[in-house]
Length: 241
Image 1 (cartoon, rainbow, N blue to C red):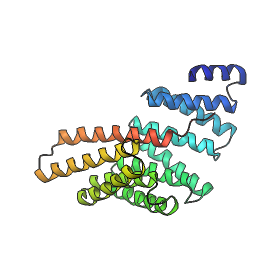
Image 2: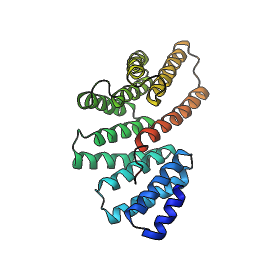
Image 3: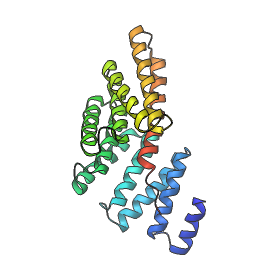
Image 4: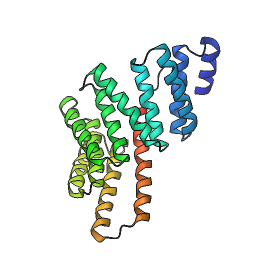
């Protein structure tokens, strides 16, 4: 259906009409959700190029398009390029929207995820703590985004080897998520999954049965899990009319 919408908008409105560009953006998001990342990335680049030329580098829709493409690049394993683009998004949102705008805080969260994937764990944890502090103050302690931020930080702390602190933090997030969102909410399921992974990781370290093969497998699973989270949370709201 989205392909049909795009074809009709191209035919009736032209390639560079805002509604046509929005249709390209929407189809790219759906293709990404289906795992067709190369095709999604190609369409996202088209959206960025058109919005930069028509709307300007600092228009909110242009910045959102860059953010979307950065998420896809991260899923494709192009971590350095993804981080570079996320830094650009964060810098622009800070300058245009202010440090405490929800979109700026989301951009900080997205960049922290990329830094974690690149192994820059200390910097990632520092940014995630700032995200939680701002969300607690602006959105409340029990807002779903605050709860997910706690879980994200816990995952990074686990990678740093701070398992007791991480498990305590994600345990608190689980209690809040179950109460606020319900057991079947995607946020709750991700927090529960994260808690299980942290406990498994602590058990491995404690029993000294970890090895390079299992560590590599766990890393791949972690990237896959957090790729799904990012797409669901950071791109899911980008569909446009």
